[in-house]
Length: 344
Ligand code: DAH
Image (cartoon, rainbow, N blue to C red):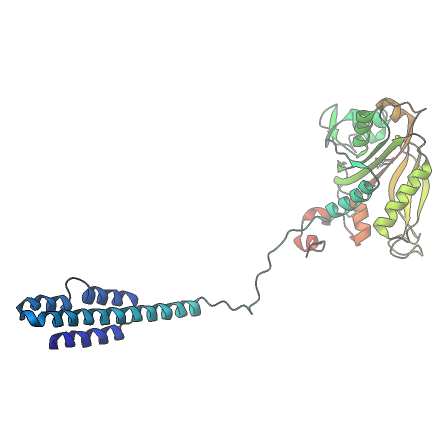
């Protein structure tokens, strides 16, 4: 009994002093397992007189459950302590500023192209594209540009071979669309795309740039339809106060042909450096689709008519955002591109 008492005291103080879970596990094995001091004492029971054995047995069990209880209590204590330490260690300072994920941006040319497309989709047009490596047939022949015309010169056009070239204008998409639609009416398409010219690159020229072609063919389409459409586009792109004017011009694929000016959005038409003092800025070429162009595509020019226009997207973007050099669009300087972030 005395020995039991000692074992109990020693056990309790060891359990009490225990500092971590693995030490505690060792104590559990020692005191509650098959080979510990409690079991040793148990073995001496057979030497006792029979009448003392039950009391002794009860006492052994009491010591065992006391120790088991103490171990369980300690285990819960250690677990709690470990959890608190872990929480302290992994604490997040929610007052620190975080990292903002870096988002890409749409290229300014894409922004302007989509704006123009959206306008015309709202007017019931559909978007059409075509190949950049184009046949001479669609780029020149069907646009009523004859064999010996200077626009076909090697100096202006990147030829691949005698029949193929890099398209020089989106009018090539126009002639393809006409052929695809003929003889159906009406045709209402908007055709964006890259075009190529053998120009030396400088602040206003690039050997590759972007155009959007507009084309409408139907019964009784007149020049006033063209004017109303372009006025709508000018106001949407450069502000409600904008006006447009037509100046006579010449393109092989339109008759009559006009060049279109928009009243200057910087000085409101008073005259400034952007409009070179004139109050007007030239933005695009257009006209009534030439009867030959309609005929070659399979339409009867006696029964229908149409208008077309071609606008340079770089030019619109430069005017709209005050960009002074066309090369900014292609050098991909991230500081320039970030200026056009719409989604932050
Ligand atoms: N294709 C012309 C160019 O590249 C632009 C143009 C002018 C397109 C008049 C047209 C048009 O559709 O009617 O300079």
